[in-house]
Image 1 (tube, rainbow, N blue to C red):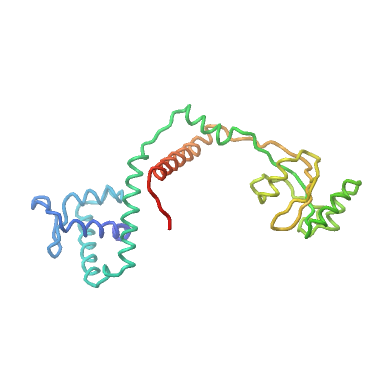
Image 2 (cartoon, one colour):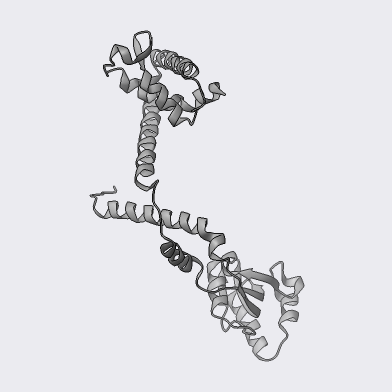
Length: 260
């Protein structure tokens, strides 16, 4: 278990050790030295906290820190630190660690009242949501689709036309798409269906990447929304994400950013 912890902690300890070499540690606070590099007593506690290894003994942690320092030293001696790609990776890791710690301190204890959570729930789930049962006839050209619409206006049967003319896989079933929510459909198709009522047929061909659609809405039904308590945790997580995004946007607004 401790060897796994070493590998997971290696990059963090590597960075810390590189910086700590220049720091003077009082003799009574040194746990060990490795080829002249001091490992402080405080680093043992920091290791346990960082890796959630509170049950590990100080002796076990110190052995891991010694092994890590030995590996760090031979890695530096090998010239690995001189590689630009390695320096870039270390910088990325340093920045990532710094940002994660800062965000944890700033937003880790964020808390919302029940009133705020209910307002967030209403924003996310308050509006009625619907499913649609529809058919479509998929054609290659706009003229073909318009001809189908004209035929339907003159009393032609939608199912029969779908079976005869549709190029989509649902054609054999009379164009039946079953029940679906709008987020399952490509945007132009979803936007068209959203404006239609039960029994409506497209007044104009609807173009998507698949071709031209003639749509008939057979039925609609309201989707039952989950209750607040079921979604409390999800709502809170979304509100935290929104708070963080708002914070980042405010930083951008007050920063001088030049993209070249």
